[in-house]
Image (cartoon, rainbow, N blue to C red; front, top):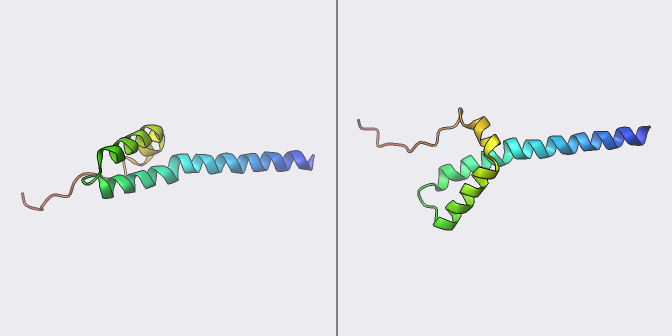
Length: 77
């Protein structure tokens, strides 16, 4: 009985780890990468980032109301 509990607990920890990577860690890294490299990316880097955005779209949607990727203007206007 104890072995079943340990296997269930390990499985639960693994699920939580994978979900947190998929929904939290990698999307935040993608937002950071896109914010810093948007104007200097090459075509293959941009293609790779677009593929990762497609792959991690649910996590990006979770953070989209809180992050701003608009370009910074000159302040005149």
